[in-house]
Image (cartoon, rainbow, N blue to C red; front, side, top):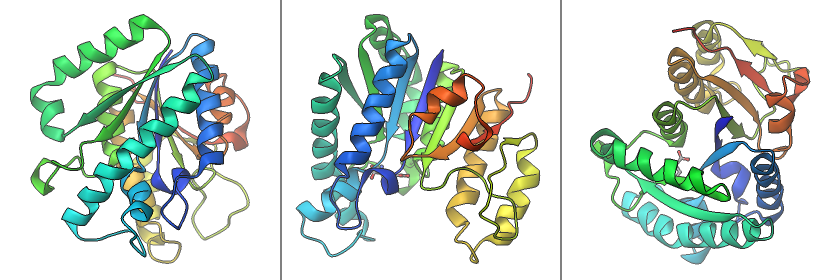
Length: 253
Ligand code: GLU
């Protein structure tokens, strides 16, 4: 299967602005496993800005655009170096694709052809991020959730996995006991994510759900799951356990 896996900054970096090695080791091992099973995997990885924070000696994640871009420039190389070293242990090479929204609009076929060539090789994982140093406001995707949806649509992927800092989507009302295993209607859950915003900092969640809505409307099934348990991707792909993540059912085209 062709799958796109998106991982957020919160999973990849620590509060102090360094890369979280143990989390990345897990991720790499899970993705290498999937490739070993014959799946074609694209990784959409955030974390460039987060990884640059400590290098530039900043006390926290920057707000100013040029500072974010400087962090991304220095953090992206650290991120890729880490991925390269770890994937090499599994005999997998990495390819870096830094894109702007404009690239995917105007030069989409080139990007698509590049990824297809990389897939033909069999043991290369394309790693995508936004090209932060040249992505000014009007060229931006919005965030990497949206970028991952664009990539999944471009590749006509079989599934999109959004790895985040929660196990999946929780029911409204603040009960954190069990996630919702399956969502047929994203619009309905978007309404309650909006309502819960603030109380449980669901702002990020509603942006994710909007991105997911775009994926399922395009006929791509999407999963929201915990980034610290990337081995669950394999479980979910096999139709596995309910608590492994939330599945958003694709619309039939
Ligand atoms: N491109 C940014 C980074 O690598 C992250 C953007 C996002 O997560 O939405 O740090």
